[in-house]
Length: 326
Image 1 (cartoon, rainbow, N blue to C red):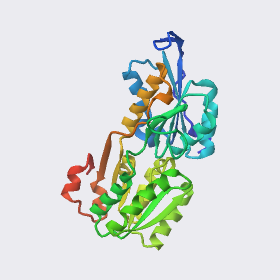
Image 2 (image 1 turned 60 degrees about the vertical axis):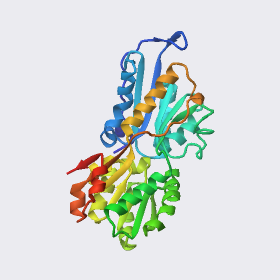
Image 3 (image 1 turned 135 degrees about the vertical axis):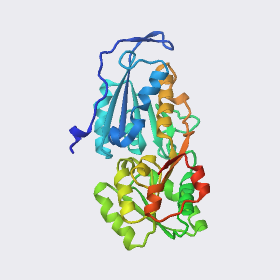
Image 4 (image 1 turned 180 degrees about the vertical axis):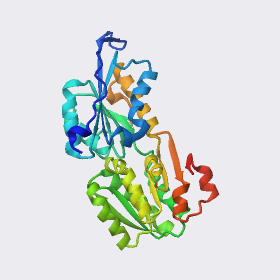
């Protein structure tokens, strides 16, 4: 699949100016959104921004235009998509670390709303969560660093015999160091040894799972990132093939066959982003909009996978799950 085939444009209807109350003058808002993956891979969150803006009173194609770019999870692809959008948009929405880093580099003259970024202060996107101070604001991926430790804990809870857990994540992504710093504290308390395994592309997956096997990993923790999101299905398939109990940040991985996930509701995060798009369109500067944390988390559990792995799910864990695949 080449880049031209992979990029999808949504939008393009004839547009008409509207009066922006905050400004008192005609203003047409053209919103560019850049995400890694295809709409099918991303799921319902792919269209959630548009739906929320409609709920807020906007009419897509009349007072707001949304131009979506779905790209391969690579820095060059992401930057190219943003460059292509910049002359034709008034506001940019980017998802994940790749998009945020590219937006910081290329879109300093536009308002930017980022979504699902682990450490925006450490990345230099904003001065602080409470006072962003520049042209960027948005929604983080985690509410706290302890969430990764919680994922490790529920993995141990569902597979109590675990001793060595592989940690699979995107190489060069701050999400990976963010996750490792969290779980390194929790692992000894759970009697676990960690095997960090960063990957650069889909081509690394097969060899990486061989490394897991040769190092006797008996569990898998997947780290959030543009790359692991796009590769959700393949990661789930390989984890099952290698008989590894696995915990993930995205429910899509569990739907594809992963064992369990704990992560923010990405549809709701898109709605949070839409609220900020609406506020900026009505005159609020990004610098005055505090970076939000996700306020809805969901646990998804695949009982079919548990059965294949010969695992007995504790009733207490089953009761806590928001979604159970039977």
